[in-house]
Length: 337
Ligand code: SF4
Image 1 (cartoon, helix red, strand yellow):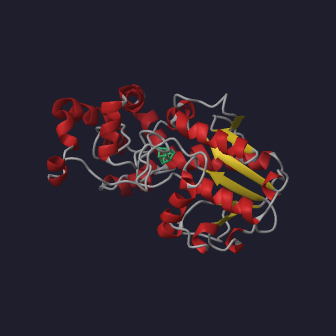
Image 2 (tube, rainbow, N blue to C red):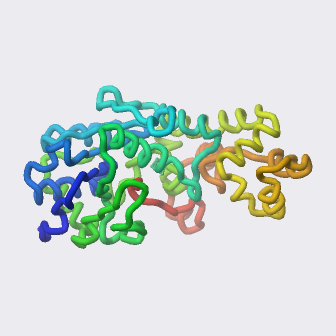
Image 3 (cartoon, rainbow, N blue to C red):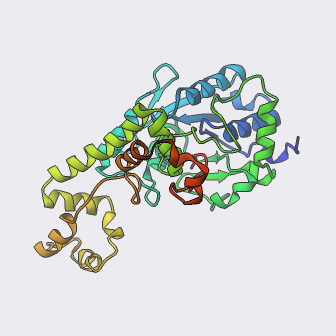
């Protein structure tokens, strides 16, 4: 095993983020090895897991088992609507949402779907609830340990840079930890995350996350239609809710959510110019009444994915379909801040 030095806890309060995947759990194990007993001192260290409600039971069981076997207190947090600074609730394995309730509350509240280029679900369901919780226990400034490995260091743009109240710390990058180290570690453990992995864990994090490949999402539609249905329902319900609003209400939502910045065509300068002043009706109609379907992925809706699976069956998962590029293979990693 590599040197423990990069895993020595920095001074002050430290938040250790557990995503529910193997990598961040490995990081926790290494920090515990390097700092015997320190992680159990909750006045100094908080291990935080944020449940979105779309995690699989295997992920929740894995987090609970880590707490039990490693004798480490883990705080389970979920997003809930509330005043600024109070958008969290503390739950536990028993009280954890299993049907996407925090996620649904968030997207109804925002009236927009997160998608690959506006991934506000990570910040609203994980980063901010954890921050609000830590503030509620009196923390003012802290270090946040985040489980990026050395082979995915490109995902960390700000190690050591102070954010709003915390400084991000990625000890696995400094320790040059790779995917291989993580796999080897879990092969030696008496327990593991109950989800298959080929280096990636396609069933990890939110089951229908928009960062997953179309192949993974299509497999979800085929193999677990109930789980797929939640995502398809969210798209349908949010689209209906959007069109039930008046054009002015739609425009207010667009402006309030900063979506106007993403209106790329020639309407954008007019909308920006009008922002804060009475908005001409012509601009309103161009922006708020343009055809809009709420979907997690601008390229393909969940309904379209399901219909493709129903129409084409198992063929779309074949090597021939791969060669033809029938399903998009773009994929993301563990969802961590
Ligand atoms: S796993 Fe995906 S859908 Fe879930 S919070 Fe992270 S980015 Fe959003």
